[in-house]
Amino acid sequence: MYTRILFEKYIQNFANGQGTTQQLLFPETIDFTITDATLLNELSTEIKIVGFDYEKMGKTSFVFSGVPVELKDQDIKKTIEGLLEQFKLNESELKLKKHENLAISMARSAAVKSGKKLSYEEMKALVDQLFACEMPYSLPNGKPTIITLNLDDLNQQFDY
Image 1: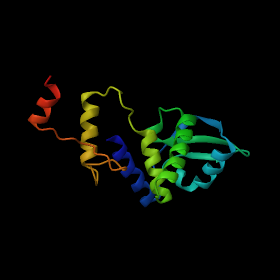
Image 2: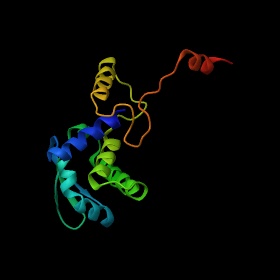
Image 3: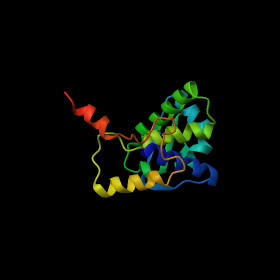
C-alpha cells in the first residue's frame, strides 16, 4: 500500500523536477562496484530529483550528503544498492521509462516493510494517503492494495 503512495509521490517529483531531501548531519562516503557506480552516474539526474544529494569522488566512490525524507532512518548503502538492483531487475522484466522504473524501485526501497508494527494513527494516516492517490486500488505492478471479503468468504476461511 505504501508502495503506491510513494510511487505516485516520486512520479510527481519527476513532474515537478524536485523532491524533498533530508540533509545528513555527517555526509557518508560509499564505495560501489564499477557496474553500480556506472549506473549511479547514468541515473544521477533522476536520482537527485527524487531527493538524493551526492557527489562523485573518484571512480566508484560517492559522498552522500542528503537522502529522500522517507529514507532518513535507513542504511544508505543498502538502500542505494537495493534501489540499483531493483532498477536492473525492472529494466530486464518490465519495459518502462527510466523515471517510472526509478520511481517503482525507490518506492519499493522506501516502503514500510511487512511485519513492522504501526500505531493506530500511523495506520489511519497510511489509509488516508492511499485514498488520496490517483489509483488507490492497485500497486504499480498491478497487484491489489485492497481485498474485499464478504461474509461467506470469511466463513470459508474459518470452517474446518
